Image (cartoon, rainbow, N blue to C red):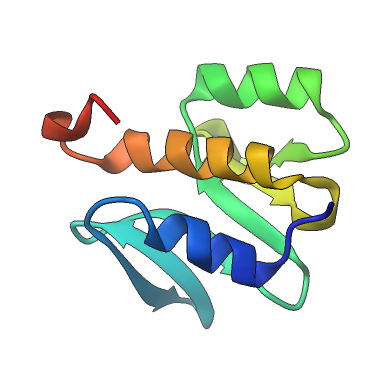
Length: 110
């Protein structure tokens, strides 16, 4: 079943210390003030902060689902996830991976 913006809000909000804010007119999700995901509601896509290694692995494995953001941001690991192609398990895994990129080391066990 495809994921929807409300699924992003529910799953991201369930992670520790997450707050929803806004970035350039789009809802974003932060852990202790650091953005790990930005939701493009109308476009039904999610921009995630991933490690460059994980970004490359997921783009290779799921090219219809993931793509690097254009330019320097993409070279830093920022990655687009197409929501209507993602099931809830993949969405949850992607959000958790992005959250881990910015969360304090004290949360490593999650």
